[in-house]
Length: 513
Image (cartoon, rainbow, N blue to C red; front, side, top):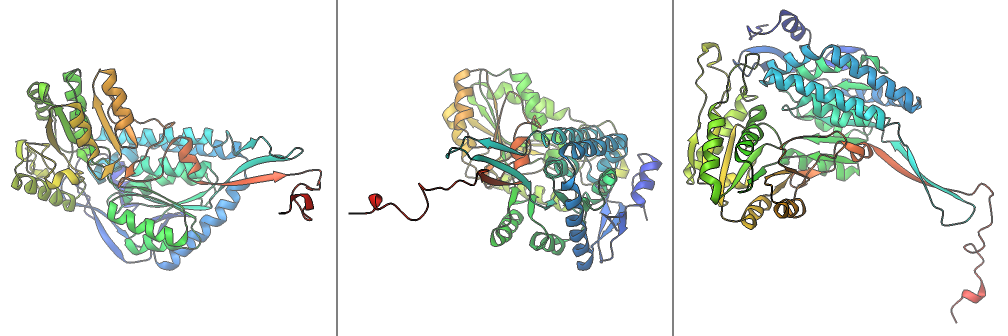
């Protein structure tokens, strides 16, 4: 096997070689017995890192059976015991954090700092859900009938399937997976083909949990379909594109199987005259180009008020021009895109925008890097498009790459109209110190999240999710925990009283006359 990258540690290169054609099952890393379906390419060089294979249908059936068996064992533990074991798994992740982060950077092209941060975020999500999962399993209600006891009980779904994208495979696995585990469920993770090795390496930390409770199943679309439609799975969490999200939601709807869908975003970033412009410009450059723009909440619509447009754009372009691009294990800010397919799609989006009248202010094409080893990598320059309007295709699309479209507006009303006119409603940003504008933004923007002067921050205690074509349901926070729990309502009369006000025979005095 040709291990492409000359950068990185021998330990990680050796680790990658142990993950080829494997899945993470009841016995740990096991051989996937289906057909090989992909070479794993290093996005920095397009060289081969490894290979991945499908599981057979019989293996998938066994995974589901093992998950359901482990779930019963897991749910029989006390909430405190489950919390302690989730904390122990988090400690195991922390012990292996640097190795997982290096594999993540090597496999997806994410700068090492971002990969290391991502693993940290996964750990904090695990620790958060370990604790809130034992805070409450229900609520006592004031009774409607004297002498009775009325309460709700929260119960696990059973086995949850978590279908992941490549852009944040570790933290997204835990935003949902840690919640599902804390709620008493088993989880089966279906990773992206572009981040399978990372997910397998990460999963080894869960060996401290009951065997089969956490499993990772690589595979193509038929594997996902089998898991979604399987009678032994009880909840689906999907993060990915709108078209695939619709397929998953339709299938779940036909089964009345609960699902959470986190689909595309095309987030606006409004800059008003009262903003601290240099801070806003730095924030916009970060929000547009973190993870090479491959973030569902990336800034894709930069909406700038006419009064400060020229000054802001000069600052913004300066920050974009200063971004260092290169191999993710070097000292860089931006790496390559995840794969060649996404690179070609982005080039098409930019070409179409230019054809419709947009102008490229900076970037616009494949990055020409000094390192000859990276010449075949999937690098695209950070790109800024101006003279964009809402009649262009790009306004209705998710860019999902290192490019941002800039819109000039004459008023706050126009800015809000542009922000809300997209089919998506995941996140939204505003830079302003005007309290009226801030109040209007948080109340009038149609989105699941609004960041005011604080782009792309997350809080494990606060819900994450979108509206419109950005999906349904919420991750994180107490809402994220309840996503993976049934609610059962109980009414108990310990005295077994007769309910004469309610039962037969009805009083003649209450009959119609």
